[in-house]
Length: 257
Image (cartoon, rainbow, N blue to C red; front, side, top):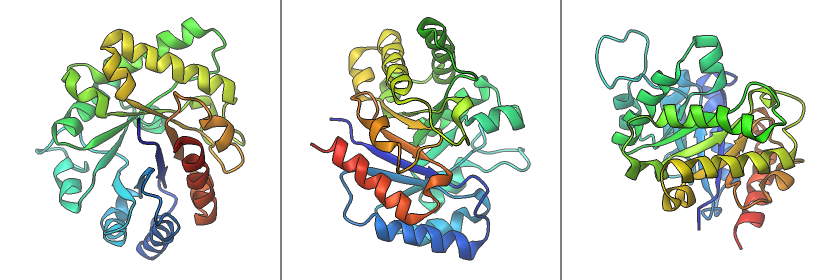
């Protein structure tokens, strides 16, 4: 059985040491004794180290919202995977739509980051998603297939099952409501189908696919009640630890049978 996942990213909303450490400590407190669900948090990069220290010994893993595609070298302003490993990170968020649109990150760069993350033994949380609502299944599948296969590129196929695919339709990020649950379920089926066709059944069954894009305590139940949805990736609705706790509890109720 695939272990369910609840991840959270703070983007650059929580940027002071005091606020960031207070928030992740509160998350760790409400997440106690929920070890049936894998949990990770992506603090703002500026407070990554103190947040990591605050999470040490808790049930919540942490990681970085971005890394350099290169381990070491003359790459001014980048954060090296060497640094986040030294801090104890286990996850790396890769290819978020904002990285692509605002900072012009390409699929080739995303591939390099994915490959490096896997080679270093960390878990990539690889973001994928279509720009606009696509009713046509074949069209949607083709868009996602290009993203997935280009991002994986030369990755050793034996490592692909370790990736967490975060399906985040760009048109639903930061909106008042998430994508329709039926649309999400259908898309997760398409994603698993893409992996199965490109690699093999075992890899497709192992890889975890989570949904992100305006996930809240009010919509999480209907989103995750499908076998191909392995969890959620929370944004602003998880800034309140009480909301986070309710989302986590719902995922556990549905997925742990």
